[in-house]
View (tube, rainbow, N blue to C red):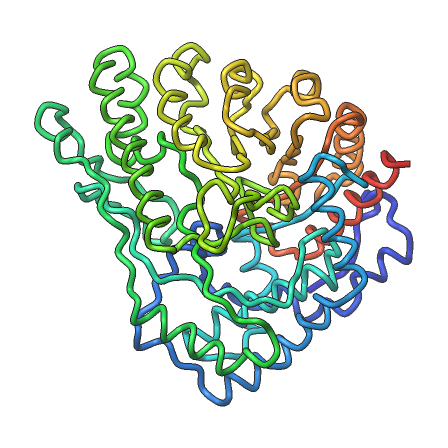
Length: 461
């Protein structure tokens, strides 16, 4: 990988340029093809036959785990933990920032680096290498703990009708055949089934991971059952995006009923997860909402006594699919179906890529709202006024900025500085995510992190 830095790279000092040394092992070779999104971490696709780690793969994983354990015990991680807790409790010591390149990770940690051959071992190797890169190269505020979380192996939500996807030859974009074609015939078929958990595979995964890593990291079974509990994404998959827009006018009663069925389905799912003791606290170094980590002393509830309830956790909804819908229609159709879900949780997050300033008058009524996503398309001046120091201003920078071979670092710095000035009196987290490519240049995320840190410290001063 070339480590040349363009002259326009924010006038980086020789010391910062030196930070890119030792990068020759990153960014070379083919993609692993692993799904690096938050949803991909939930729907693992694990099968029982893959739940073994060979001795040779264990020899690769153990030194990586030892490195992660060392990072977790460092003074830097202690400071990062304090920063997140103070932010989430609305008493910030400083802004925090983190970078999750998502599928851009496949252009950082590639087949050239990967050494494991087994399916499970490769998944764990990728996770460990990502943590090491975050600490050693990006040096962002990704909190790294001496835990290794094993997920449940669970099937995707089953709403009673099958959604058929037709993918391209490159396995990138896809189109789907929405199953709810006739409300009169199909609406009654919609009913969210109880989660289908493969306990045999889950237990085998936990046991094998404990065998290989358990004396280095604290291996624990941790249920993460949703990325979002928003009601409009299931609606779109079941009915279609274009139909969502027209149904508000052509079939308003039927659209409300379908949204209500989705909301009720999620509420039953939460009931079942609580009753079965399958929920896990997310007030630790768990990714919550559409960006941010859950570290807080405000959760769990004071009456928490072992079994995790929704009110001990962060909850999250969003409605990206209705970005073109008026606040009046959002309030009429969407909000009434989101609110009962959000009411279940101790703290809540709202929003993802949609600009929420146009419907803030409605969103602000969500229960115990703490974290608000402010996408690149939001009006930051309005959102800074709305949020003040009463909510977390989750500042999402534009991932397109580093999706090219020659980012305009001066422009990136100016934009970030301006937005930090606007939000000077807010509780701010700065987040780079939603990257589907970083132009095969790992240095893009490293240099972005350098600039974010510098501007963040300037505004603090």
